[in-house]
Amino acid sequence: MEQTHATVPAEEAPWHEQLADELLETYGVLPEYYEELGDGSYQVYAEVGGEILHFAILNAATGEYHLVTTEGN
Image (cartoon, rainbow, N blue to C red; front, side, top):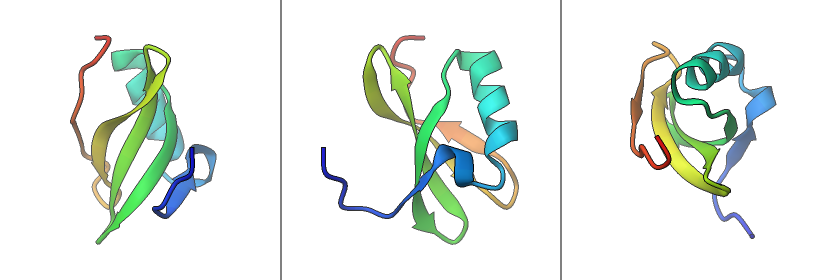
């Protein structure tokens, strides 16, 4: 699948470890990649039920995120 947006691989984001730990503990998913939206905001994509889905929106400055899907949970 060809992506037309700028992405940051999950392991390269500076705040990835804390977010990954929290998403795994709370929702049982790990981030696959992030899409930078600008102003420190990122869309977080995770594998849910065998599909990569838009899972959350993250404010990298504060570490706060909001779920956009609860598929599989």
